[in-house]
Length: 411
Ligand code: ADP
Ligand code: MG
Image (cartoon, rainbow, N blue to C red; front, side, top):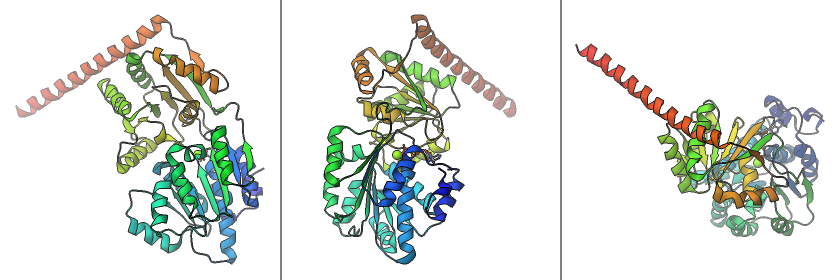
């Protein structure tokens, strides 16, 4: 089935065509009819399979159709996401798809002052995309009226119902009508979280695509055994061999992110970081630079990259192994998105072997091994050290040449 054959607003079809989307992805094909019918949906599908448009298309259609006959102000749909960056990205999808319709969306994020947010909301927006904390704040202060909400979406649902967010979400529910449509979307979900989701709705339609192998089939992923102290050499060596590639590097903590950045710098490689200790403006700038390719190496922690869609990330490196298979799926899922193929490599040290065993068990099938002989291992480190030396040498030579020129000019 093509998008052309769907009974949805022509304006949406126009936008889909403009983006080159001809056919729905599997998750879009399965969820769009249910959402149009008004059913509650719990949808689990692999990373990068177009879940955002799977809810955005039917939501925009429903609101657009209603507005044809009934001018209604007030926010009708609320989409919640775990980070500002993801909220902004979802808002962009909504704006792109609703451009030729009567529907408007607005992303509420922390950086903007409350007054201008209030003005914008009073102006009348149909869909709000936000993180729970900020939203709760606005609802409590009665700046934001949520009594007309008809559709509630939790993107990255398992994360939204987890410890860090569940209290905010529960509080928020007090402001939202009970007889709404609720949609949960994620690539991963466990049984406990599923039960929490079921508690929030009556009888949701469950749509689960290939839950047995949660890693997207567009991703070739493997693990190499590299000791902690050698990881930086292997990372720098990988970058030296793929200088034009967009690379996303995952580490376990904020402190590690800065450390790896510094280690790379010593190896002569420029990189940027994104994590929870960074200011909102810094995080946005890092995302912008990486998206546009001004910076090719982004070092990130788990949370900061959930759901983020940068289509041309060719490789993900797990510099540290993630602590759970969910984190693994979301990390490697930053590559191989949409129709693209991607590659992911995990660096596993001796201390991390138990984590790897856990991952193998929970992922349904073991991660492929990259076997390095002792010779190859030593050679990579040697090569990297050597490359660094020559690099310094060429820099010094350049500097000398420049000096000579200057001296000549003075004469
Ligand atoms: P998910 O939320 O499932 O991880 P996204 O919604 O972020 O995935 O979409 C992943 C990528 O797939 C995006 O770059 C998006 O533009 C692209 N995409 C979505 N739907 C389609 C489609 N029907 N045809 C082609 N590409 C699509
Ligand atoms: Mg998503």
